[in-house]
Length: 295
Image 1 (cartoon, rainbow, N blue to C red):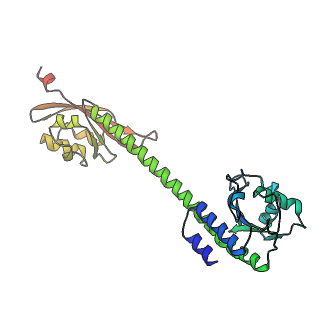
Image 2: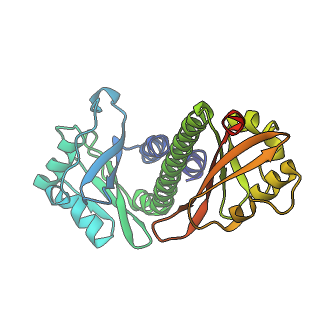
Image 3: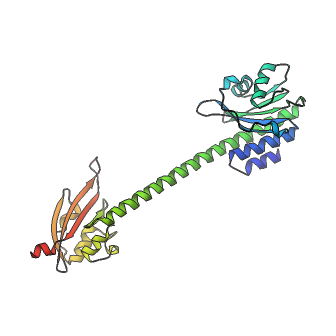
């Protein structure tokens, strides 16, 4: 019991845990073989997931495919009733032959079928068999299987939860990677645009800006990003009241002209909205039109 408990607590990898559990149980009971079946949560089919036998060469190299529960009456009886079943070859010979055949044995012998129950739900079954020695199992063996079943069932739940969380974490990581890649593509596109572009959030603060904007305004983006766009531009023009005033609350496309250090800058701005009508922010495109104005 101590050895099995330690094994269960050492890993969250279900395959590793179950392999160690069946080996420990077989050795503890001096049994010919021990195996664990799990119930598929979606289909209800049975899957042999771990097996240990003293005759290692007799263990199938590949686990058999899942089977419907009704094809293994002994397992179905124990799992559905949620009670341990101790089987002697004389009592249910045909059903025991089916079970041993699935375990890769042509022989039959006494067996203990212990359902693995967690929160009143069947997780699977532990099977211990003496198909070679045909030695009967005593009460102590039956009690050990019953005692260890609770820990094995808890380990199955913990491992499944870990797998679920691990899948969620990997999915989240993939989503974040995709978002980063998409953000990188958007930034590359933004930087490739010849005209200056500034994007604001719903509060009117600049959140994106390309290199062309730096050249057009003659300032580093650090002076603009994070600042209210209207205030940032007005600080460059040196005017508190200017043609830029409508930028803060424009509800429709807007075009205007302003001057920075003798250069004429044309700006086209338009709000960005969700289908619901909520405002996401503003996109402003600006171009140095000094030569055009002079002409």
